Length: 167
Image (cartoon, rainbow, N blue to C red; front, side, top):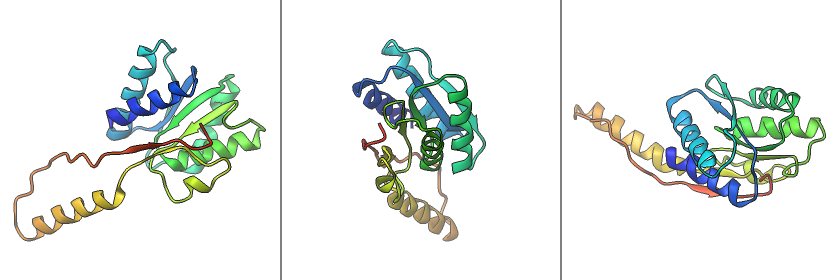
């Protein structure tokens, strides 16, 4: 998850963004992405990102409310959201306020859900192989049901930063 945050920051920096914010759930994995993102943008010479932490699970209204808070404080720049639901809320609020995406507010989500490629503009996101994750979890559950000892382990299923029109 830390590597995800780092790669998203690198992608946004490469696109010329220099001001950043995070809207993130407070769960362990989302906070690891946050830490990688913050460290990377700061190492590149950018100011530490503004950060809004939301409860889990996240949803579209949380994204709208968080963007409203940022914009009311004068924020314009790139926002990394810990879920596509938050990102869709950010885009919805940006549209409602007449803010240009990606001109004034750039948006990156996480999850690359089916709707991401069909928003206006298409949502940039991080693709994780959810099907592979599901299979790994199912295998572990079945092994446990068979009475086998299942030791927790971390399995890297990889990820891809999918840059679309919102960034």
